[in-house]
Image: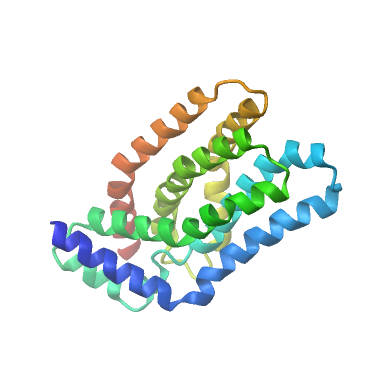
Amino acid sequence: MSRLWQGVLKRELALAYQQKTELVQPLMFMLMVVTLFPLGIGPGPDTLQMIGPGVIWIAAILSSLLGMERLFRDDFQDGSLEQMMLSGIPVALIAAVKVLTHWLVSTGPLLIMSPLLAMFLNLTVPMYIALLCTLLLGTPLLSFVGAIAVGLTVSLQRGGILLALLLIPVFIPLLIFATSAVDSAALQLPYHPQLAIIGAMLLLAMAVSPFAIAYSLRVSQN
């Protein structure tokens, strides 16, 4: 089973880095969103510090949605997805590896650039630490939950708008808890309860979503 997992992971990483243009698009979109907010509301340090966590998280959610549509799209269009489902490899395993690959490729650059974004939005060190913790726990949750909706809409010609309509309401609780954690850090209050709730949601998603994704892909194939 470990060899199967490693083989699927290597394949997905190789395919992901072959599509460098699609990898750069979500990152550039996020940079534009984070840059335009200060230009629209003014460069006041206190204002930027107040809205900074929300801006970064909104940009992370929107950029994640932008890159999520291609999670199963190419494999569905060229028939690779059907072959993988008939190969005998557990579909839940394939789904989990593809979600992991999506998270590494789409969120890795975001985490690397997060110190620069924090400085740009005048976040303090405690606020940045809280923001980084929420991103580490919350962004995999975005990928796991989002992949279920992607599996349901993979057979649609233009499923991007429907995907956003399905997922944005689902991501609102995560946005609330993540920004609340950073706000608590700004006030020098403990934010472990918010992290615990996000972590619990992530563990639940990790346990359930691979099987839900596998079911949604089977439904789309029929």
